[in-house]
Length: 516
Image (cartoon, rainbow, N blue to C red):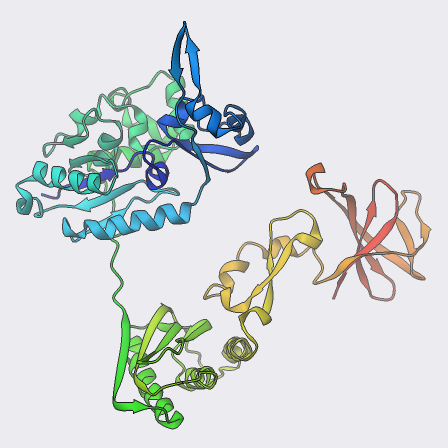
């Protein structure tokens, strides 16, 4: 029978940053600006709570830490020592996930199948312990060993073992004991007294059930199952089945990535460029053979020069590829810049990042013209970036900013995702109303004639034949000068299509872009 374990790290962002005896307050951007997302129990003694605006939380703390951490507070004639000032930290979900991933890989000593829960901010690890418990004296011995292991690393965990991931998650989060072992087939009995939040249901569904006075899973299970989808949605039924073990829930295990590398050791230190290039060419061919066999493409490569102090040659590409000619040329260009003060004793070529190479669908006629342009562009970007530097070859990237001149930024081409299409999905329809050519800054527009509605009818001595709009754009006072604009699309008789706006404060017209 399959048995699974859930290891929950309560307040995981706090545990990752906690210092001995000090409280931690983590804040992030929220709907009302910076807000407290998580706070430790020590910080809660100052009255700080999750969801509180950061400014309000700071107002609860004294200005001088030296005075507060040692100055006593009088309570009925007795002096009460204040708790230590908490540390304010900005949320770092990437660091939280990376550290949890390290723990997941560490837990492979207890089970070959270990993964993180699927959540925006994961705090739990899942282990498939089927057959592994006998190596640790049974399920309780395994749970106690893992809990002691984490405690030595300064991490407190709650552990639950059950037949399903859903039951183990709910009991570890809302059970009474730090270690809970659910006998096979007893999920329903152990889940019934727990609150409905133990089912991992959406917040909206939870609030609806609580408004109907359904507080526990046992009360929920007494409701006729046939009425649940129409009243509360299919997600509730799915979570119930997953908790009871009636619906499968797949675990995505974390694997320790094995380095892909090739080495060439010379009998004697070599300084001849031709010999070094020849060895690099052979090592690259070997690596590409291995990548082709695994249907992967090379995205980033590192070439280490053994026995020298010369910095490694780093090769990063716009798109994953297995094109030997292109890679050999780029590697040669990079190696030309290397200065070897002593002979090279060996070369270690290591694959840093791989990806899926571009796939080409077979056609009835052998016409690859449609596939040559993206590949040619990628090779051009790679060559220019190698010669001029990564920061010299830039591309525009959209930024979620309401003000058009700040709605994009220039970033290195090589920092783009492996597939440029990933960034453009879902934004095409939004860009249809925006010009392809945007001026660096709005320029005054000469309007010779207006209509009765106050719209231009004669612009730069050309008649306006069609006007569409307005699109109103405003920014808040915290951005500095107020921006209050009404944008219009003006089609002129001479064929030009302008993107212009009127300043609602001054009534002046400005040209901001051209549709081409």
